[in-house]
Image 1 (cartoon, rainbow, N blue to C red):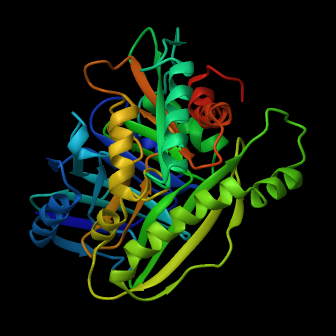
Image 2 (image 1 turned 180 degrees about the vertical axis):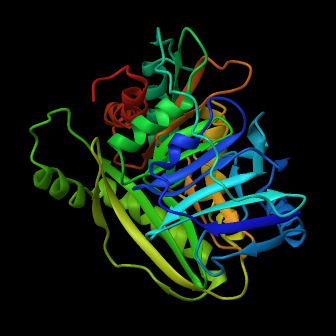
Length: 410
């Protein structure tokens, strides 16, 4: 397989090249990132490790002719979305190789095309006009709110008995339209309202996540840990007061510490140096605030971004701790197939560099029900958790997708 990468003039908004139908992907933040069009290879699996091996084999078969060697993210890439828990999901993980990649980062723009021979690197035509969803309604989820809060209460009891330290419980919400959803509309709405997040569109998974599981760029690895949340229904609420409340919350600080420790321990075997800040910062989003810690390290060896993602997932931020016990509690009480929600979503290149976020603040559209989207939201449960407060937290986390769908005012 041949790949050709050339520098191009700034192409404008990358998402405008996405077609309404056919394979396409996107991973964008503040106007930077890429869109992928078409598909030259696809791998479905139950394991991140198997996908890593497959991509190594595919990478070895690509003859890459590039004007931009050494620039982060340029050239052939594989884009994927992985299940949260393959042992307890009917969904499969997927890694695809786009036929065309149009990207922009750090003032540089490029296009990569793959084919059996050297290909013309001209920009493709822009996609069809975007359709706004019609007749959207919500039709409930897998369980009623009072059932979910009762389950939260059971988890709190388990934690207070010492059976487990932290558990993340999720719930879902189904939205249905009169006709197949145009996911490009949701992507554009999310990017406009939440530009500081990573907007993703991969194989029916779409969302705007604030949490970067791992980035590998050369020898440097970065992971952003988010856990601990505060929000307010009052638009006039003082942000400084909310941030102070969050930073002083024993419950939220405890939840965050579990998450940071789990990521640091998972990264340690792959790094010969690592920096873990002693205290978190506060990340402000339009709808919520999170405690945030950016962990950095120097990679020891040639572990790819996908290898690192496999080592980190699932972190305490989306599962709990100890991991195996939290997974058991989730399986017993959650009554929900998370599918690819809270799993890694992102990309890796032929050098092993890449970015993998956690698929949060999003939903999934399946081929058999193109007019329906399943939304997900979760909350970290610790000893001081209140079921009613955790329910309100999940409601706040549904906001980005409900706004993008037009079911909630922005």
